[in-house]
Length: 425
Image 1 (tube, rainbow, N blue to C red):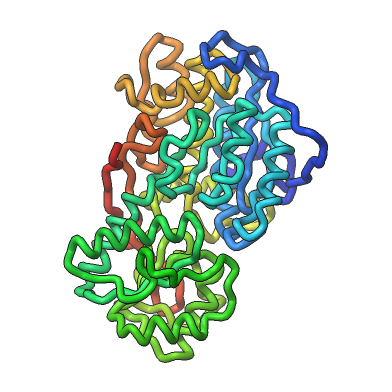
Image 2: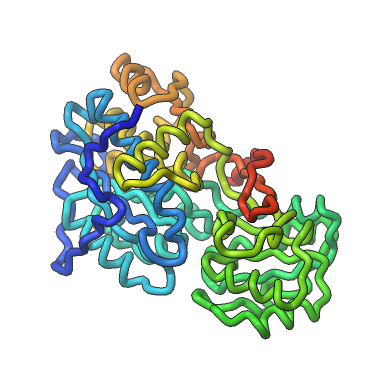
């Protein structure tokens, strides 16, 4: 069944930015004490419609839109339908995009902002949202620096301590001892690199290029990898880990030109574990391994998210990375508003850990079940489609799955298995 969105058509492209002064949200008390608010819940998105992470936009947009439809079909939040204001996050090469979007969303009175996908972008806007009393929930940020960064920032993706350990273990399982890192010089890349390196060194391997403190990172947006790859291969690695976004295409092309054998030797991460069937010759990435935080969502959820996106945007989804985390971010915010009896961003933030299961309680798997339990006076533990554990005191998931993917001969990724990891803190 195709769901019709309560948001306007053309969601992903409706990022019209305001250039006026921002106005703080007036929906709710803003003091975190749950005094209540009759204002409708307005959810904003600050997701990658343009830039190097634009391929993540469709599944994240679909997750948000599907969640809002499910919430409204169940009666909305505190008697009102949830409404949506959409915006573009861009990427770390032009921070003005996210700054303008945050200003726009705040001016439109959002109480909850879903995004960003890039950790560096979230670092750029988190203070802006916090000062305005807006709860920011990222479905994809993994930088460890964001743990506990604000009482008004949380996420449904785990910090890089989890993915770093998982990716490092895969490198070690491949029997590799000398690892080269091709890593972009920004928070996401260097933070993940540090955690992968820690994992491989604990297993007796070493970083021979691009390691922590080497100064061999490349700038975001880099397109010329000739000397970078030459230097990396001169270190005679038996494995290469590429930690980047769109830059990965140029890096892979240069590795091909310099004769690197990818099969069983090359590892990608969530920023670049994508479908490359239209980018490289068949067989180029066969045997490459990549990781994406989050378990592979159930097919029913994929079908619903894809149908929602096709109905709203005119084409089905081809990728599902962070769709489940985006969906759960919205459901958690809505349940927290119901528990707090308020749509104030600060009140929602104060209640979100509780509805995620931090206080135990009745397990629920849908918004409707959660509302029923809350109205009965129960504490609840929302167990969502992403499979994360309750939110901890650092506003991180206390546990999460890391999906492991293998590349087929046509350069598409195939889900292999999921590794569950606990989050420290």
